[in-house]
Image (cartoon, rainbow, N blue to C red; front, side, top):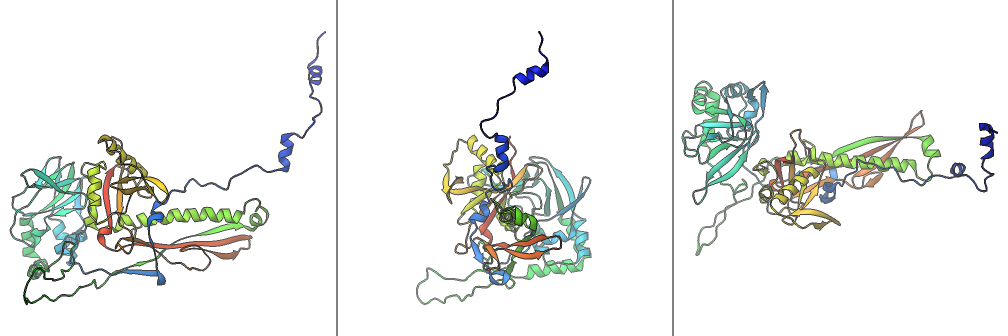
Length: 469
C-alpha cells in the first residue's frame, strides 16, 4: 500500500515546542552592536608630534634675523609637444633678476634659451671650462661632480626639475666652472649662451643698467646661513679697538593666520528624539564628523600651498635621492641638514621602500618606543607613517624631517583655545538651529596652522622612488 505525500508530511510533523523559538525571541531584544566604525581614521602622527602654540588674535608672526638671499627659487616651464620654454616671469627666480620687472625684456631673454636633450652620462658643463652659460633644468636629474681631496670624483649635489646653475654669468664677464654638471637620467635643459645675452644687453638698456647696479653693490658679510654677520673680535690682547655691531631683523616678517576647516552636521529631530538608545545618535554623528575634520586638518598641514610642510620647506633644505630609492645615505644626508632632527615622516609605502633598502644592506635598526608605540627609527630618530604625504603617478613620494618646538626654533602647530562651545583645543561645535523640515544643524569648526621658525627646522627628501625593484 502506497502512502501519499500529504500523509508522509503529516506523519513527521514536529511535536509542540517546549520553549520560545529564537526567531521569535529576537523580536523582543536587540543585537549586540558596536558604535559606527570609520575606515578613514589613520594614526595621524603629525597631529600627535606637533607642539601646539597658542595664537591669540588669529595671527602668528615669525621674526627672524635679516638674510640677504635673493631669489634662489625654482624656475617653471611650459611645453607644447616636445618643445619646452621657460616662463618669462619665472626668470626672476634667478637671484640677479629678482627685482627686474620689465616683462618685455624678460620675454626676450626667455626666447634666447636653447633647448638641449641630455642622456645619462652627458656633461652639460665641465669643470675648468669657461663659465659662459646659464643652465635651467626643465626635466631630469643631474649631478654636480667635483674633485675630491685625494683626486677622486665626489658628488657635490643633485639638480632636478626647476633647478639652475650659472646665474653668475649675468654679473661676471669671466670665470670657470668649479664643477662638472653631468646627467644621470634622460632629461631636458635650457641653455643661455653669453653671446646671446650680450646681444640682448646691447638692445635692452634697462637690463644692462640693472645688472651694472648690482655689480656696484659691495658684498655684505654673511654667515653660513645667509644672515647678516655680527662683527666680533676674539683672541686679541692689549687695548685693541673692538668692532661695533648690531643684529638686524627682517623688516617684513611672515605672519601665519589661522586657517579653518568646517562642516555643517545635520540630524533630523525624529532621529535625535526616538533613536537614541542604546547609543546617542547625535554623539555618534558628531564623533565621526570630528574624526573626518581631524583627517582633513592633517592633510592641510602637509599639503596646503600656503602653510603646508611640503610647500614651506626652504629650497636649500630640499634634497633629492642619489639613485631613486631612499637609501640610508639619503636619510643621512637629510638629517645632516639641521642641528637636530626630532622626527621623520613618510608615507607607509615609502617606509616600506626604506625597509627594502635596509634589507639589501643587511641593516636592521631596532624599533624604538615613541609616545607609547613601537615605531621604526633611523639613527635613533623615529620614522613615523603619514598617509597624507602624496604619491605621484610615477610612484615617487617625499620624506619629511623636522625639528620641533619653539625652544629649539623648530616647527610648531598653531591654534587658539578657549573658543565658544569648544569640544577639543581649537575645535568647537555651535548649534545653528532647527529648520522648517525639523532638521537640527550644528557648525563644526577647527582652526589651525603651522609655522617653520627657522629654515633649517624643516627638510624634504624629494622624488623618493617607492616602487619595488
